[in-house]
Image (cartoon, rainbow, N blue to C red; front, top):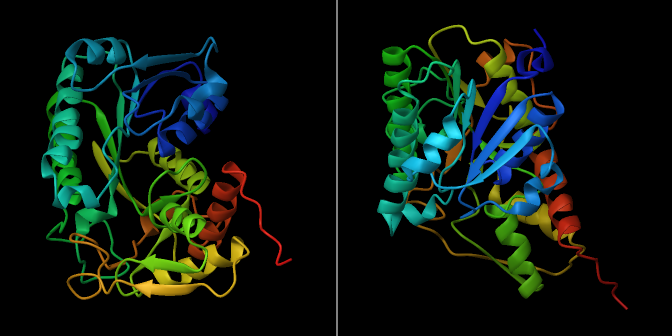
Amino acid sequence: MSVEEMLSGRLVLVTGGAGFIGSHLVDALMMNGAAVRVIDNFSNGTLDNISRWLGHSSFELIKGDLLNKDDLERATEKCEVIFHLAANPEVRIGSSIPEIHFEQNIVSTYRLLEALRKSESLESFVFTSSSTVYGDASEIPTPEGYGPLKPISIYGAAKLASEALISSFAYTYGFKAVICRLANIIGPRSRHGVIYDFINKLKKNRWELEILGDGTQRKSYLYIDDCVSAILTALKEPRGKVEIFNIGSEDWVDVKTIAEIVVEEMGLKDVSFHFTGGVDGGRGWKGDVKYMLLSIRKIKSLDWKPKLNSAEAVRKTVREILRESHYTIESDS
């Protein structure tokens, strides 16, 4: 069954659908004939991300919050497929304000599941989890069956707790769940992360770039188009009641190389790199997983593979973000 056949005419809810990943997923769902409902509180997403669909007969936007019971009941009514992306995406904030991840990631997930508990229409529930659930994995590339899972950030712990809630509700109340553990997803519309931070820092000071950590942090990066196609592939062929898929690229890139790509694409010269040294052996911040590369053998078995490797995804993302911000390369004259 094709993605279009699977989604055509189905009522689909996307939580956090005005955000970075969510809005790209909404684009794909709309183009595949689904009837799409989005709920977003716009704490991270923007209306611009989904403006092309406003007024479309198959699109509905609810400006609401998953912590609000009335908003939830309205959002989940008659939905057949739910993509749960709403979350606070800032990993770093968890070390100073852990309550944010507890409320916005764990409690909101529970409230959503509780609203769905007696649903007669729900068939599939898709959750975007994170590679951070693995913590400092001793096995790299890290497979889905790796354990024990020991997240080192509040964000990673919140994602793992949400996975457990989803699994228990799926088995108890009879719907299928697909959990997607994402690598670092990058691309246009992204408003946080190392690439976005580097670009903004260099716009303020073109001669020096502060780099958190020691620059050797090495991780997998996946372009947003590849991410969305992988999520839809995972939904298309669920094999069990609860299925977990790693979604990422097959290689990785270090932070220093990312900095060099950003500098090159911005047309800058003679930029000095200032490494902060970081914490806990060169990490960018408390809870930063220094080395991350996921095994994607399972999702590849469904005839999916990334079109771009990590460095290619980084370069394309830099160009897209610069284009979005109307950045022009200054001449030397």
